[in-house]
Length: 355
Image 1 (spheres, rainbow, N blue to C red):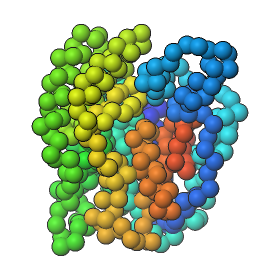
Image 2 (image 1 turned 60 degrees about the horizontal axis):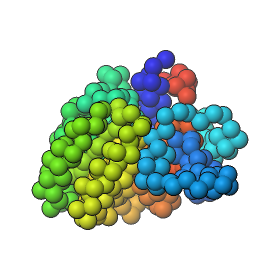
Image 3 (image 1 turned 90 degrees about the vertical axis):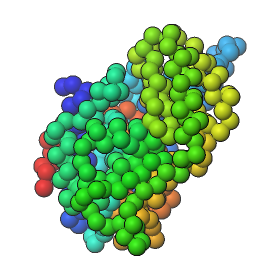
């Protein structure tokens, strides 16, 4: 089975579950959760790695930034360990506890939030070709028939819309810094029936464009590196870059960002993210959309967020802080996460049918 089938089967199963839960709904958020011992993508956390090196007498100099690039972008999958088993216990498959969720879910209104890359589409070498299947699009369309549905992505809003092509959805691009409501479909809008629109980082547009041009020039000699302008943020992809020159790429990007203290640098899955240093992320986008729909202070809402990346953790944290909602991490390997449930095996898709 291809990676695309793996990702799409898991994500579609989650959407199927959301539709079914919508028939019955409840606050089923689990407040108690032990942190997994394995870090992002099933690898040792950087602290553990450093401790291990020190224990072995390592006097080696460790480049923290490059270490973090490797930690967020492993080239190998972790083997089955006790840590993995422990992780599964604390983050059970959402499908394995499906019946319990259904039995506990009564009288709530669902709002669905979906990441795009790695959740609705496969992770691919060329970010311009991260297409979702027609089957997945149909699944999302079916979800949107039942309740408000939002795509929350690090991509430019216009680009992710062109991938999804569903006008009845809410779109939050640039890690939630560019939000717009549906042009058709769900009519539940903000107070006064105003359309939903939010761009909290608009003043940074000239700076982002300037840095984009500089980065294009700086990394053009690094084979496989790509710079993507996502309007309110930039993504430097290194999925196709030889790991031996990751340090060179990282240094080039850091040197550029040093001259822009109002921007910050973070890492994702084989991508470096550059965005405005403001308190706004996918978690804020989730809160904004709930407020826009009139659910910000409601005990009668069940937000469902399905995602696979570090940036989705900001949304999972919001759900945990609210004490309501369903955070589902799409991952076959253990990750440090605030999500309560997981989707892991593609075979799980066969256990569910679209309702």
